[in-house]
Amino acid sequence: MVETQSPFYETEPVYLESQDWFVNGVAKILADLEPEALYTELKAIEHSMGRRPGERRFGPRILDLDILFYDDRILRGGLVQIPHPRLHERRFVLKPLCNIAPDLVHPVLGQTVQSLLSDLKDGGKRVILYKCDY
Image 1: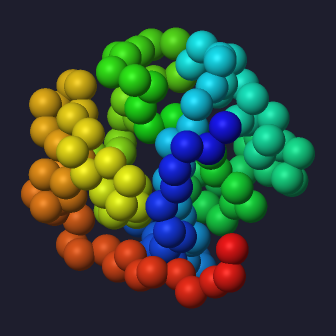
Image 2: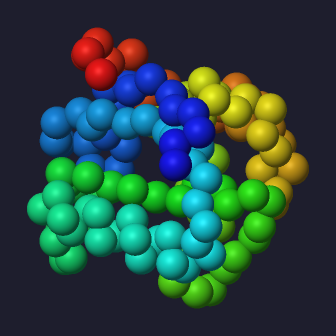
């Protein structure tokens, strides 16, 4: 169940820059699944929407669902890594996350999401409020 969600943002590509911009958002969900089972469900949703394994990493994709945090858990080395290992480097994640949880503390880095966004050194990648009816 979706508890809260951010607005959507048009976001400039980060790693593979010669492609269209993305649309990104963040949602806080309540789930009765352990992280690995939740991850498997998210990948099944991506697949049902047309995403296929083997697509170019960081390239265009129809849908990309990630687990950013799962309570204050830290998981490494398995099917899923929590917190997401690159979320602190990505304005397209931090900006919408700040809309719903600016005071959330990253359990590894010990900084709030707002602090991570404020300290971000990404060359000022653009994240623009997406105008849509939803």
